[in-house]
Length: 364
Image (tube, rainbow, N blue to C red; front, side, top):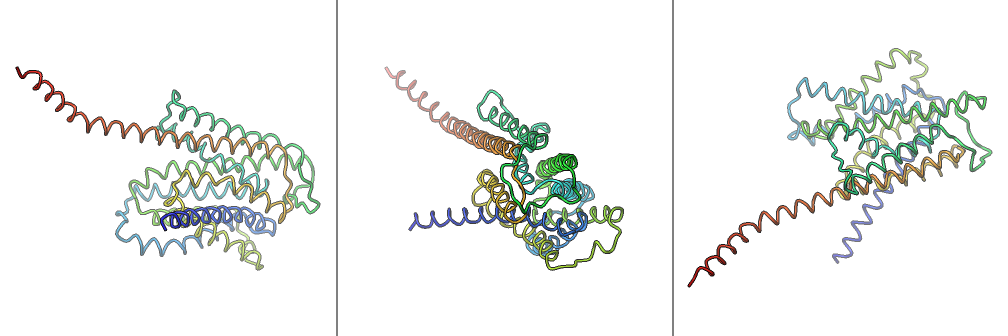
């Protein structure tokens, strides 16, 4: 019975993780479809965050009534900055990168986020690195591999590996020179998206300690992100026609982005991290890249290029190396704590034994 329950729990976690990656992969494809059919690059994230806020807000209000600390001006400023990095810059760079590059490359480069997060956390002394231990060396080498892979993707496109007659080129691209230039800019924007995502996770860690109500924190972040996008729209998206939803396809893409990518994914990822831990969840990240490549080739007719494949492989190697280093570091630290605790507990016993031995030898 115990074995059956254990197997059942593992299977549930595995199915949930695969579902999570499918949802992520679908978001890449759906977002590119939205761009292809003419949805505004500014309006799309605005509608997405409106839906996400409507979903998360009520849950945060009712389920975290007793967990929310009192709001202060300092906390509101930190929420605003979190939104600027984690919502506005993150989603803005992503949608711009996806406009010029492909969903496959966007997903591949996202695998470098753990390595970039490690670099930022180390620079801020949040993450400790011991280069004399193999876990510290693994994190450094993994970071170098991930950054190198992202650099290859950005600077080297290479020849296509698969030829698809129905390939849809990026919008407003007509010449080979423009293709190359737009591809490079797309990769740079996606890199900006990865940097923003990593910065958001690093900056979020100390904020969560001050404000542990996670759903409320996410809701405030979405709210301020929405305000920031509306300010951007006031300058760059003044045409009322671009705010109109004209087809069922547009409705589907916006609902998917808001409900699935921002609602279902957050709750599903939280559950998976709770059941399997963050490292185990991160290990499945490359599955998303494979799913996106297949979907993009079938649905969008995107090409696969040798430079992208080489860079993606290097990034995945770097990802697993960093994750292994982090896991090994945790194991070593736990082992050291256990040894220290054992020594602390045994010291009084050893002293008592020594005293008894002295007492015995003193008896004539």
